[in-house]
Amino acid sequence: MTEPELHPYVEWIAREAQRPVITDSAARDRIMAAVRAEPAPRRLGIWSRVVRPRSFTLSPLAGTLVAAGLVGMGVFVGTRTNDRDGQSTVGQPPVAVAPRLPVSDTVVRFVYVAPQAGKVYLVGDFNGWDTNKTPLVRSSTDGVWTVTLPLTAGRHLYGFVVDGSWSTDPRAPLAPDDGFGHANSVKFVRRGTSL
Amino acid sequence: MTLALLRRGLRISLGVAGLLVASTLSAAAQDPDPLGKLEQNNRVTIELLLDSAKVAGLPSQPLLSKALEGIAKKAPGRNIVDAVRKTLGYLRTARTVLGTVDDQELVAAAAVIEAGAKPNHLEQFRPRKKGRTDIEAFIVWADFLQRGVPSEEASTAIARLWQDGADDETFRSLWSNVQADISQGLNPGTALQNRIREAPGRASPVTVKPPEGQQENQSSR
Image (tube, rainbow over all chains, first blue to last red):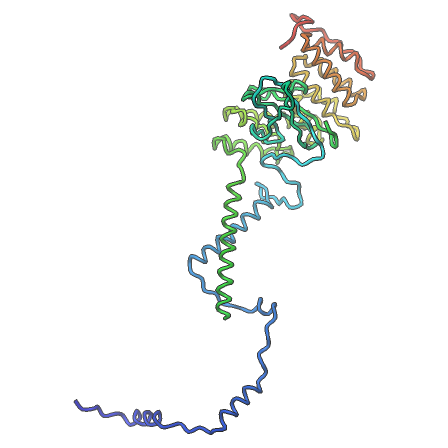
């Protein structure tokens, strides 16, 4: 097999490519001097780094996670700054969805006498009617159960759960029939009083 | 080097985003749904009633409290809805009679109506005096009704004391004495009549005939 005849133009390119390059010995020095003469790149400040455009490459999974995080933040903030009607609650007193133990300087002592009882709980609107949240402590051997807790000023409905059975406070006025088969007691707490 | 920094920054951002998602989900899981134990239809009805109260400018907290009370007392869902609806009705009536008053006073007045007082009896409490609250009077009034004091007698006695300027201590003392007498077996109406004479101030004895068939030493309960 004979070598194919090359095009003259190709042969010229090959010759030029193979021709040894003869450089001026001072050229390297001139180039380096020119480089040194250039001003050093300025160090970027924090603001410049922040505002300088950048390109990111995200996988679909990473992008989904970032989006989910942003949505989660939005939901988190939104639920705490808007009520169920979409009204802003910023600057407004919080509307308790679940009644919580109020913070108050008014301390109230509840007493229930039940010598035979094993467990007594205080249950009312101030603890979200939680039947296990506010236990009374047997303070003596004569069956006196007590608990002291802070309450906001105002009218409070409550009852005692004595060994699983609802009971009213004999020392307090009765509230109207609750409609559920158990009466409640009422305590009116004045601001700053200690009962 | 820049690329490495960018990658590290991206990893941190993703980590923070993941933590935020996790914390949001965790917060949502820990935030107890107070009405979560109700059936969906009852729950929706109660939420509508809560919204109705808000729209009407009435406190919604008593309605929510009533629902929670029903749940705590293991009442059937329908009963809870009924109780919440009635509470809203009492609040509306109290607002109509008393006008714009403090939420606590409104709730106490609603309880009086709930206990059986006629709305027109509340009208005597409409004139307001600055710095004076009628909550204690309403509480005692509702208690008397709950204990079986006839509505007319209880209303007249409380209204007179109120108009005579009785303070909270007077109402509390009256309640304590009447309650003690009832516990001793006295007829509730008679117990009130007896004790109202002792009340300080210019309160006049209530002159209402005892209901027929009731003895003075007979407990109503």
